[in-house]
Length: 324
Image 1 (cartoon, rainbow, N blue to C red):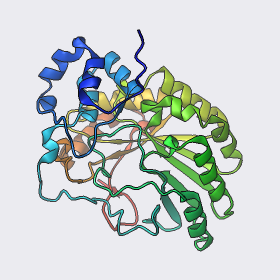
Image 2 (cartoon, rainbow, N blue to C red):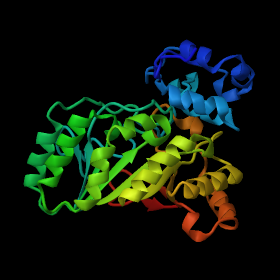
Image 3 (cartoon, helix red, strand yellow):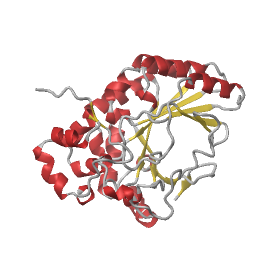
């Protein structure tokens, strides 16, 4: 009988759903030997992602992305609560501006998952009930802003009404010509993306539209993500992907090569490969800059240049990403 669960918030329920076939994998994965069943940063995983894990070629990698361990409790020098300077760049409860003539909207505190390496895992999230009004008011006095970036949380977790209201508030400002959405939902909750498709299909007639997916491993991509991306491309969206370089997940040239190629098969161009942001609780995922450069050099020999992502880091206070 099919499980009615669409989201797991309790680790034992999640592990029960994965079943005994993955028990050995979980037990043997060093990074998962230390599960934290009551993490400060709450556990959250969609059933869709659990299904991806069940059919993955490399289930341990996907498990490491989603399961909390006691390594997250370790205090490490240089790892802080706000590693990319979001709080000093805040212009209102929901607007962050780090770069000239562009603005990022923290549209919601809700995500499709709680990725264990999240750079905002210590961010003081709150859902702003009047986010559309606040954004419109801020744009009224910042008429030089030409690109608005919807982030969060995940903007596509908003209900259709709230999402449309936010889009309409932005569209009232003729200076805004580019709309960019950052989302993990094509691999976490593709059904939640589909609930917005009536509006998403309309938007390229009103903005230059860019969707940046957050995919870190080839096993996260399946037929449902391919359908989402195909419909967006057909509607006129530019599709890019950014990944985080993660110890035990993507710190391998063959894995990065497979990810870049599979993204391209689904119509998405690799865009950024981020070095880990130094948020408290994520140090165990770090890959050194020297290792990162070697990985990029190796995949450059295997892939055409347009499929090699830019290796970058975000430094708080800088006016752009910093190439490595």
